[in-house]
Length: 341
Image (cartoon, rainbow, N blue to C red; front, side, top):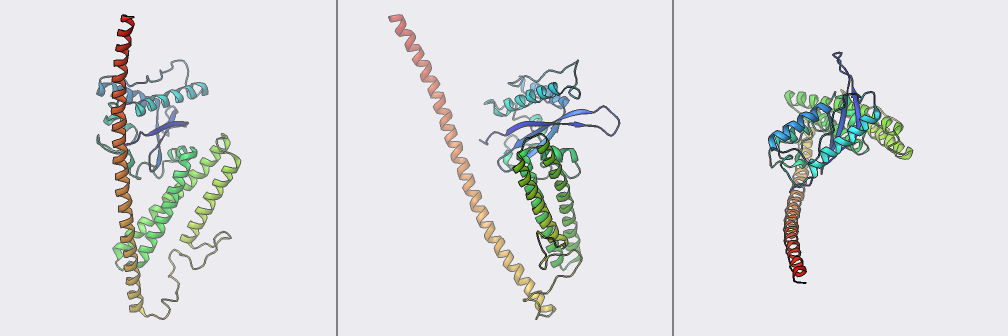
């Protein structure tokens, strides 16, 4: 049995459509999974549709009632109503996620609402990265995710991963001998850099929101700003070849420039360099194989722990049922004893 999803709605956002329609309030649903966190933005009308779908599919209303709609106030003009509805919607989602009755969680409407993978037996820990962390270009979703203290760290790791992916793709492009492989690697590096740039902007704006609302102390804000600045500047300079005071260049990668000579390549001709490159790639393949064995072993250990935890949970469930049965028998015995007395 997979652990329950940790759901919260820490913040709200106001969306102003570009088509001229009325603005509306978005509720930033933060989901924390065993391996990562992500944010889903929904309107109140989306909650109403979810409630109707769950009640229709299950044949019974969810364990917590949905906050009622206000006909006299608007969340755009009433911060009190916004906060009251935010707390009510959070309680509504948590009641479904933590309820012992799985009927509402096992529906397709619930999984689609939270962008969870399909299938009744799907594990939430298997959520893919693509589409879960807010996508490139969705500025409101990026900023909403960065405005939560916990999700900010997940976005920062995602940004560093994108920069690392770009660096690996550039290295593969430079070492490729086929034009098709070079083009594909260059496109992958460009996509990763665009994603990293989008996340950098969201992280900066998220820090300003966290500082302005007082949800992080001054010291923590300063630490995260330094963390973001050092990581993004050093990684970017390694990719773009721009030396800085924090990360002076010592033969770093320069886009479009030839690779510098090293002690291993200076005395070699073209054929010798090609042989050396093949040897290096062979060593890297061996390292990858060793890492694959380690990861496979870790996966086996994780599955063993998962099965053991499930077995203990089943035993606790049976113990709980037996306790209820014994309690009922004790009640009957006490009732008989009172009658005899």
